[in-house]
Length: 487
Image (cartoon, rainbow, N blue to C red):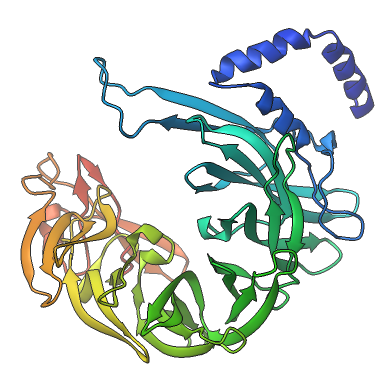
């Protein structure tokens, strides 16, 4: 069949279907608790593109020509945290959800005591004009009854960066997105904006856009970090330098940028803090050096003075070359102690992808003291692994109890006195495990590189390899991972 014949045949086939039975089958398969009518009401209200011809935000019925009405289903499972286990050692759960627009993925979940918002990304390409665009589809769930019932929907252009890109303030949703507009005939352009949507009341179901900023940052930049704090939003955009932008959100119908500061590098996490009664923002990020023959990066902590929103200042910064903290993207790894003004972060340096490390390498945590004009490392908490790397490891986490820091990283748990930095005890999670292969010998691959762009692989006996300084053996559960050392 050609396209025209296929469409005609598909329409004839669909007209013969028993849609009542199909709808009932869908509901039965979803096994939802609560009123399923909300599911279809919300689905029908979703739109494919939230723009008018003038470019202004709008909420209309969906354009179903793209076939994205029932493209994905967002499911939310709820249960009582205070409930006891039953005789079968289970806890009763309630399931809810709804269909969502978008053809990408569920990018974020935002939760308050009685409200949940999910954000789903969508991407579209116009084969006629050769233009592409992205959208964020927001579903609102009411959790006041113990079941997350979908009750409202909205959408805005662009995609969010992470979970801090969305915020509920009173009866409004604030969301920051970056939209990439690409065309075969023009260069890619970006639009970074904060949108404000009103959460509907009564029988209304649409989250109307009531306010939006102008483009934030320069063309070609995208949002790397954002943090909403009361009636202020802090935004970082990036391409080559980092504009740190302050947005006044006091008038939700007219949010606007009021201050900006350009600094090298970029931030991925922003944390509002207070020192001596004055407001600051502590950022975690990186700074790249593109002037050397080999590009290199440094982990970077920056303290911004935001006491004057129209003129933010960089109060202090700390850079460390050849180091990395996964707290840049794993925000649960960050620990801020507001009373003692201490920041605890995981850090690694001197490690490559497979865990190889030299004599000066470090893996563990660093405790920083944050002052008005200084970011100063106080001491390290070392969690160095052995040369035997394998996948069973824990991401860095820190906890503070009774003036003691408990840190978990890789395969060890360490307790340290917060004031002195002296280790109290250490526990090896791998204690008693046998890392060696069960065979009498094992193989590792050593790369011999020649300028003919070919690799030669030498099998190395384990006993010989252990005597070789430039070869590492990785053996676990009879599995052997190749080294990436190039000789």
